[in-house]
Length: 498
Image (cartoon, rainbow, N blue to C red; front, side):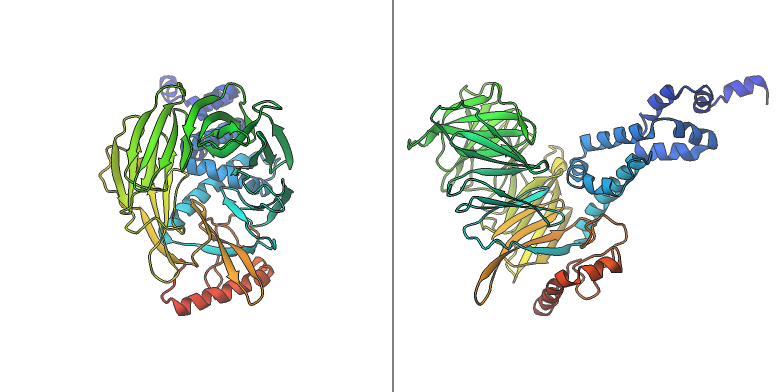
């Protein structure tokens, strides 16, 4: 080959590697996606050598960050499961970041595949608190129980169903407002806000209104990265309160300076929703809901009003969109900026009961509803971005819809990872509360690790194990569930969990 032909076929990647210009190589490789970066290593020996000298850990961390920036599902997986992935990756391994990326990728695909196949596993934990009047909250990573008389908070890990902490809160505070948000447990008392970090097991007390101001907080809510509270004077009966909104830096850090305040908002049967652009006070009536919409930039300005033709809807708010289920079982969205509304889907059942649930999570809309048959409930899932796209043909059918059999719950939570419920089992002497988990995650029922190969329990098909060792170790716990599942099959045939 002539010198001119060699110049025409000059390999840039190989040339940069030969000249040890690793910084330039890294800048080139950072524009590749995960599949392209893997294929670059397979192109030839020279490219594989070039890829090996760049900072692989940095490149794969960058790819992971990019993926999470536009995939809410990946962001949720990162928050809830990354610590478990790190336990199985050696910190000294230069490819640990790649391994974590690959595990995220597998978990996201397995979740979506399990949605389509209705491939659920079941697990449970006895609350074992011996308390009454308990209040539950269920979120992405934790489950909390609060007992007002004793003031005890009991916290479970949502994935493992193991107790993380038993925390002593203020006793005999029957009107205490609390919020479980990511790894923070927050509650208000005497105008002060307490933030318990469930990771570090530390509590900070904040006094946003000063030490002695006679203020009381009667409503407490976290939504879309904002903390909002309604603030009034202590010991004064008044249906109007100031709505105060603080921006959250993280689940345990709040920008207390310069909050946004909406003065004198009517708070009877009212729910507050916020995002970066709007503060909404939704007043629920018997036949309709009136929403007072304030601009976040001008919270003391005159609001505009949006009337919703539903009494007490399951009202959600995200990305400037109000989402609800009408009395006819239709999912309706309202663009707050324009007040334009559309029916995007039809659930097809009465959605006013306690055992129904609507949630936006990880970029998807989840509807969980009773369908009338014995112990029958339906899970339906829509893509939130597609459903709210003005160009989408409506009504939009769910991309998956399945029926599962379960006892009507006292408390219900459904999201991308599965369904959590609290059921009360009545015994001859005492009753007990059971937390049930119907899980879409590809994890072993015993070690709770994400695995690719997870054979099911041959008897009930409701549990998966990564090995016979895990299955034997879990048998004493799984035995009752295995028996109950077989009983359901006999009473409600055909009964399918997968």
